[in-house]
Length: 474
Ligand SMILES: [Zn+2]
Image (cartoon, rainbow, N blue to C red; front, side):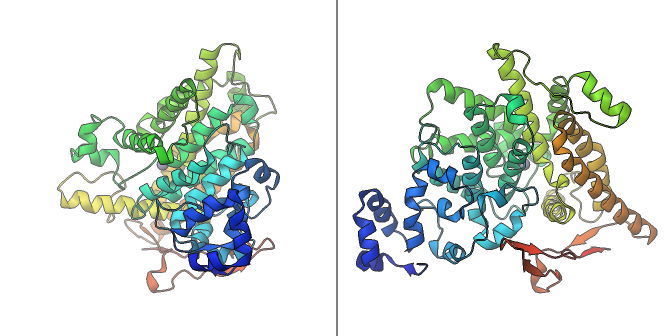
């Protein structure tokens, strides 16, 4: 069943011929004939793809059966690459929505460009949003691949994996708490935050707003030094949505389109660290004092129900209250790698540090002021991580846990990570390293420094044993 069939085989093969006669499959197969190869498994999955209800009931099924790019004329993907994976029950929807999910493992299995589309489809499906009443389903894969392809793989941190990662973090907030009930979420709210999450850093060049402004870049001139990147990402995202072949919002009535656009603009702009205080103050104003005081006095959050919506009949205040929570969710998730398990968090820190240092190199060359954390010669990664987690992450996530105590695992991980970084900083100071610079090599560079051992757990999910990451401080 898993042999790869070329377009020529496809026409000759009797099993395929019968499928080909089915008019429902015919159109899809014909469109696929223009491409390299197609497998039987993919053809089997067509009916599932076209029926979100079946997919919904079959949540445990191998997601590749529901996520394969059927129409790939808009990207350079080969079905060949995915074919091998169909043999193994490696991932399913449930695993992608787990707290411990490691998307770097998924990347190794499916390839960089496929991560965002696979995860995007899984997340939309888990909220029941893959529905013809909401969106034209045949435009979803073209849209997801277009988003994935507009991120630069060469941007080490702010690439499509980051877009997929923060969206998964947001979905975890909803999945592991009563946030949906508290927010009285409607399909349009969830759709807005998932699409905004996936595209929130679209086309990121790996150079910060500070760089754009200092370099008087085109982006800074276009957006008048104000949230340059965030405005740029939004414009790219809506230009993609506007295109006929990727217009996933085309079924929305104008009023709903306006509503979702307004939501998404607010959400993506909320990822600008320049307005960190504003986003936090806004959500703080929605949390009753007694919830915050209780936490401060007893250090315990009692099981009191947090209410976000003050008057469900008042559309204006309800919209504003929902927006405050959605903006806060995307902003917190954007910083969320620090609330993941240390080995995963460490990979993100490495990628972000290396992206910053490349910016620093560029700033040096251009005789610009080297931005904070961007000087590879003087950046003290453990120390800056301690400062960042203590000064930004924990205060940000405190509000999350006050509102939704079941999400306390985020703060626990952040505190654990802070301790790990503190130990590294102390060790460096004791040994007289100055500056303490952490050197992490996760890419191996052909030298096999990363002594990881790959094993499979009972679900067949690739899992690394301890001692995954070698940390060197010089
Ligand atoms: Zn981001």
